[in-house]
Length: 410
Image (cartoon, rainbow, N blue to C red; front, side, top):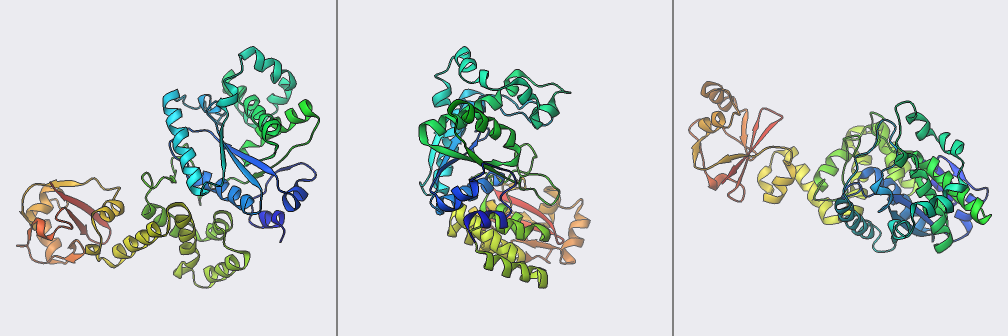
């Protein structure tokens, strides 16, 4: 396959601009960019599809530029329903530094990162209107899908003008860095075409672009902060174990599409996983491959192996295999309950509200429904001490099959 054919096979091309786009991608070495506003101190899995596509283009010999919107981030692009919350300049600057570092790590340094505030801060308001605003017709802007949808509920001038700034970003990179192509998610198509039109009107030349379909989960929601389902690329915000759990549990109908979008596995390898997924879905081999490829690329092989070890320990019930850090990772969502002294198991279950009464606690114990760090407790006289805690600190109690509680010795 040619590069363009592979991108289409992977489902990475939705809209295109420029008659010679396919030829440029297949036969030339060009400079392209994609952008993001630093609204958080980490990118998330929704951004990762763009990162992987940019890496794919870079591996084919094209030069990637990531634009982090130090200027546009102060405004926020229009959302379909309401205006974005304005963040402070200090928070934005910190986010910008974090994202720049994160992207450079993903690309192993093989990427150029720019900040659109470096050129926008040189403009006065009137100069920008003269240099850019006069070239873009108001009716043209009103016809943009995202703007048209907001007209009934109202849109601020700041949001309305956002497309002018993003359009100028493309023109600036075109003139200063010979960047002839923009690659974004499909929700940015209106802003992309503004840049293409601006380049044509100011220089008389053609620019190129393609958009990628937005990646959605099984409920049709895109991955993102505003949707409340963000899986952060920063391991301190979303651990490799959390990422692993999400990826091995994605819907069977989505997993092959995700392998095409998020991984560098070949067509032949992915088609083999597709067959396995249909014939033996219970083995989840495609899901495991997806998790391995993404986590290894983002966090390294050691983090991936740790995620697998935690998952296997919890599945087998052998929690004692885990160390303190892995316990914290595995049970991140639980609110720890503090324990100051040695205590009888029955009293512990009642005191920490794991059971409603001593009678219920004794019943659970004698029925074999209580495990402590993976060991089944059947003796109502069992004494809980630091010596039975992992690293003399953590005790994980499971009641029944699914209810977990974390106890921490102070």
